[in-house]
Image (cartoon, rainbow, N blue to C red; front, side, top):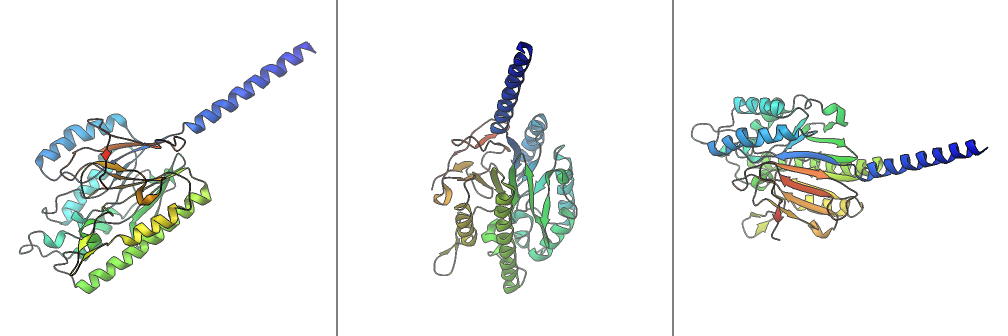
Length: 324
């Protein structure tokens, strides 16, 4: 009887320890990744990329990498070889998947590149960009429940350690509403409207999936700085107002932390309480002639004070606070 009691006590202790071990593991579960974009724009930045950023990235060996667009300067030609070279870069950048969302330098600004020599159609370049860079899923993406949007394959979604990740095709140059030099303007604007509609639907689906699968955080990545306005004929216009209204409505209905990552402007900074929501952070990532580096993000949803730990990978710099 005494022996049975001792065995019972030992089993109880072991069960309790196992329970708390599982609980601690769940509480400390962390998703991490590296984001890079807005470079290289010149030879100096190219040297930093290949001699500093990429070796540091390989040492970290992240589960995946997100490229948020502008892999070249806007003055560099937009030919097919440039796209193919970038596809090779993405495929060899890391051991894990590399997810890419386009920047404006890759297509909507292409009609401004040496217009006397090239006369690129930005809509034709976007079509070719999709054909070359999004013809196949990123390597290893299927292990992360990866999916993409029909007709807009650059819009992607995946999961890692109970965190939902999503890309949206939002770019600078007024999200494609400015500087239309070659294409028919009415047609180009119509294509922007269609892309906006697709983005909004993809965003809504992401929030629906987060709720349905009870995921603990969200990270949404795009290129364009949605805090920017553009000059119109009589006043400043906001080409990103639909996105901010949709984010405001959707984020207000969830309690999980949400990180928005974008490039296109400087400085490297973080904004808490974006759109007045205490669960939404906005990161303006490195690059764009500011800090030439990639950024490492660790997502720990159980950490209410700092669910997103962010540091540059070469200099280990935290982002400054964005000016409002």
